[in-house]
Image 1 (cartoon, rainbow, N blue to C red):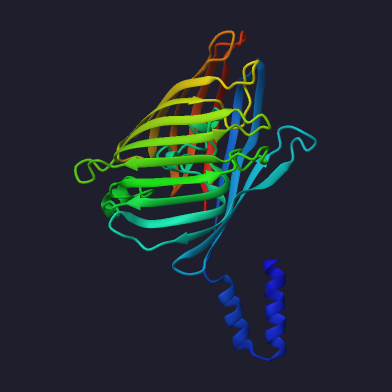
Image 2: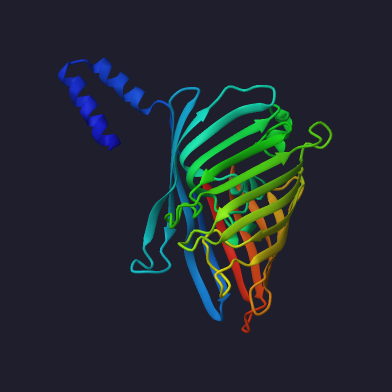
Length: 364
């Protein structure tokens, strides 16, 4: 469509024999447009549900276009590229929309700094924030997303803002430039509830919100306390109850990043895994993560432990996951990661699942 419009503009202006107008039209068309990509490539060897696996694969890919119209309006489109693992197109490369929204940024005040609103297929409050602290999405999804509790994007509307201005530039440069609110940040919104990968199967909407506080911005800027909550119905015609209450503690420095997550809730966002009476189960889980940067090197050591428990009958079902590895940063935002991922499930009588992996995250 972009090429068609460009050809039309070029042809129209050329008919007027005005080469300067052609150049101006092209410049105006592309002014404010940015393009970026992010790719997760991997070699894996391991076992899942007693079936061994050994393959090179494309884990994920993202292609993003953004257009800045002025100081207030921005539009974003992100394509999600992945391999179809099931269905008629098994093995095919699929492209679907991850984000497609219009963003409006309001003026700042003493409390809300750079407040903005997104409408369309938008980012939801939690996963983006956690991925800004745990940079290993190339290894796999974050804790709550991995177990089907929350999605990263959905159809709806999101409001987000930094709190009290921005943290100092030195911290942003050396530690983390994402969500740099001096006293933290806030995000909340209303969504269909099934995630960007699902269609709406009922008339209920999900409310999700996050509050992150930086209590000691001058003394300890890397310390943040966060709460994320969600309330709605599971995305099925039955519409079972679904709620999430999560506390998150994060500590970031130049050398080490530590996080701890404690989660309680009821049901899953897709509305599945119900009792014989079609009632949702209670969930009670936690996760810890550590990332240690070896001084004066581009090498980091990482570790993560997830414990997920659901009160499924006739007895509680839980899974325990341990992830250990090392990463090497070779370009800004690009890394190679070597990791070992092992899962033990209480309701599975076979051998534990495990994956040994070499993965590459490439950004441009």
